[in-house]
Length: 327
Image 1 (tube, rainbow, N blue to C red):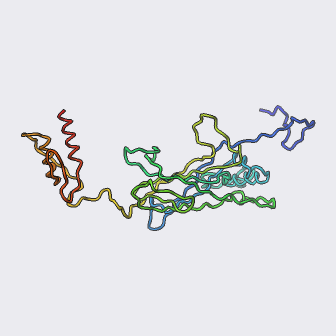
Image 2 (cartoon, helix red, strand yellow; image 1 turned 90 degrees about the vertical axis):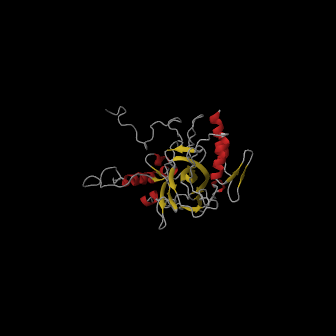
Image 3 (cartoon, one colour; image 1 turned 90 degrees about the horizontal axis):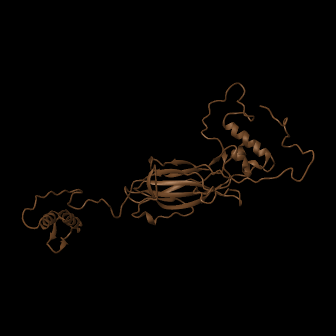
């Protein structure tokens, strides 16, 4: 392999015969969505998972080479060089990409290299509850079936400015702006449809339910900075990033209308077995026996509840079932 141009000009070289069409500028649009936020659940003693009290959120990272195409890291040559050096240092390598003197780089526990993504300006938070089996759901995934309760957005602080004196320090390149933790306020509610979240403050989380919290970074920039998908492309806009999810749950403290309260004097589950009706109308015979066991007054034309007992729809359903069987 060889360079047929004999080496070619360097970037800083000037042309020998300058013409109008020698050089041109091309503005790139960003077509790479941001990565996911990093979520860190925190617990107040004696709470343990899945009873999460707050969620720490860290800005997504942007890696090489796309970091050098952002105005923050690529517009100034000194900052771009410092960014490359910082990314190499995360891998335990020297600024020129070689291992340190004396041998291979030391063991590195860094899972992902990158610098804070400067184009992320806010996060979207979606709170969902797990749907009951066979119930309708807004999203069905490996986590299960969930229905959305509410969604809200929270702004995140911009990254700190670089030094104004022209000095570029690696600590300035990798510096991030802290994002306030998402506080969770567990509440007892009979109907989650009434829950809403404001633009600030704790997130109301219903108790006694599996709740999935989805955090999505949202990007922003000048017109044309983010690319535009072709017509008919079903992918999300490029300003929407990869999501991060966490499932939490807290036991109920009180229920105003308990769903599974034990009826006074009755068992939670009760079965009735009747002998065949050999004389008269079998439907009337079964209904009268069932009414007697449920302590209901029953006759052929009407059903009314005895004092202190709730009307049972089981009689009507049983009657319909028997009629369907006879026909």
